[in-house]
Amino acid sequence: MAVLEQYIDTGEIHPIDLVEHLAEHHDWEFDRIGSDQIAMAVEGQWRGYSLTLAWSAGDETLRLIATFEMEPPEDRLPALYELLNRINDMCWAGSFSYWAEQKMMVWRYGLVLAGEQIAGPEQIGTMIESAVAACERFYPAFQLVNWAGRSPAEAVQVAIAEAYGRA
Image 1 (cartoon, rainbow, N blue to C red):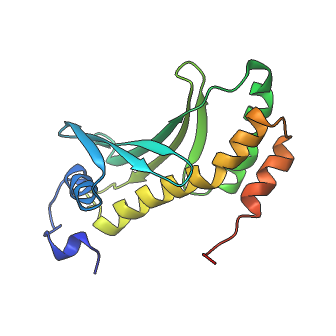
Image 2 (cartoon, one colour; image 1 turned 45 degrees about the vertical axis):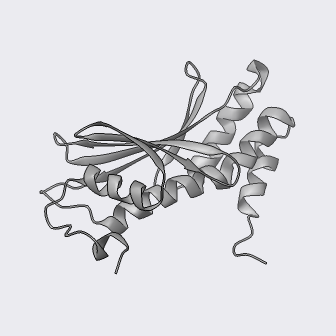
C-alpha cells in the first residue's frame, strides 16, 4: 500500500491535493499557487530542483516540470543542444529542454488522465521520483559539456555508465 493510501481516501481527490499531501509527507518546501497548481523544492544529490505540477482540466493532463538553473557559455550552446538530443533519445517518459531566456534546464512530463481517470498516489510519486532521477542522472553530463569542454558523445557516456545501487 502506498504511503498516502494509508492516510487518505484517494477516490475523488484532486491530483494537486495528492501532490500537496506527498510534499507534506516528505517535508518538501511547497507553495500551493492555486487550486490547479503547486510548486515545490526537492533536494537531489547534485543540487536542488524546482518542481511544478499543474492540472489542466481541458485536456485532462497532469503536467510536471522540474527545473534547475544553468547558464552555459554561449560558445557551448551547440554542444548542449546536441547533448539534449542524445539524452532525449534515451528518455521514454519525459524530455529535457533548455530555456535560454530564463537560463533554465527543464524536464517535462505529462500524465494524460483522459476519460475522467484519477491519478493515484503511486503514479504521482513515480512522476516526481522519475523527474528528479532524470535530472540527477544527466546533470553531470550537462556539466561536462558546458564547463569541461567534453563532447556530447563523451558526456552522455557518464549517464549510460551510471552505477545502480549502493556499495
